[in-house]
Amino acid sequence: MKREGRDDRLVEAVLADWRTTPLDPKLKATLGFLERLTLAPAEVRPADLAPLRAAGVSDEAIEDAIHACVLFNIYDRLADSLSFYLPGPDGYAASGRSLMKRGYLL
Image 1: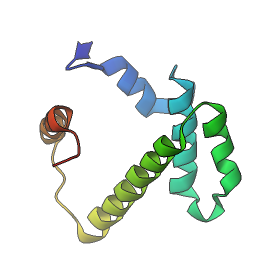
Image 2: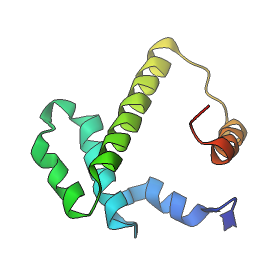
Image 3: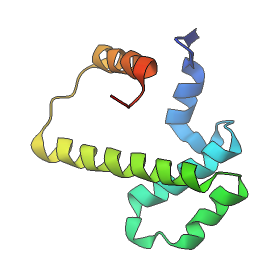
Image 4: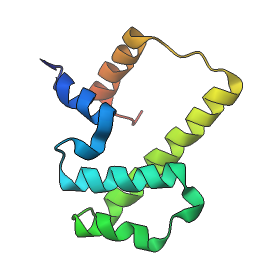
């Protein structure tokens, strides 16, 4: 089903296993790097950027992805440690609609 510019089957497939989902090679390389950055940050080395560059990801896009990853990881850890209230699916959907309209910039 497509809704609001989103293919629900694709979203579900990515959430189930992004590695086996047919995605743009740039996105797939970026997700692999971000997974490593999230799960083993102390092990990330400059050589870990080679697959992104080989896939055609620009340095600016790599930097943007790292910033987003770091911020979401901080927010996640804060939410866990301070027991933040988490909205249900309707709250996340409303937030998503808002982000689609205005982006992350205020």
